[in-house]
Image (tube, rainbow, N blue to C red; front, side):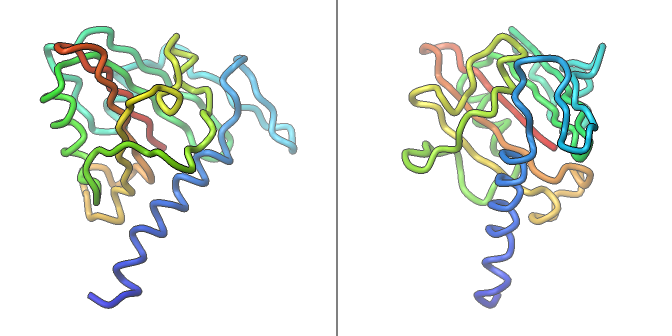
Length: 171
């Protein structure tokens, strides 16, 4: 593999994250207008089952506090899924996404929270101390299960010795 082909997946992942952060509106209200008048809104009756189906992320049977939503946008819809499970299961969900790097903390250059998970009554994962993160462009890593997903990221936050909060976001 030459240097250029090794750089391509990383570049696409960074570009995907940047697009997600710059194209998303604040989740404070139900209707957000773009400069050309098109609106984004939260999908009515669209929750965890729809988000899980789009992401191809199975909610563990033992999970509690399962929440989900879909923000309908003029360009890319954003799918949110959150649940509480044990640490081992949370790490397994992250590994199943096939990220190039394992879960890790981001200590520098943290993106501004996009205020999406607030719609679910949760704090934004980027603002939580000790949260670990991984992200991936499924088509870039050849994940045919998620060929319709351009970018997916997971945040994992240990709540206590037995409970870990999982946040998954995709577009």
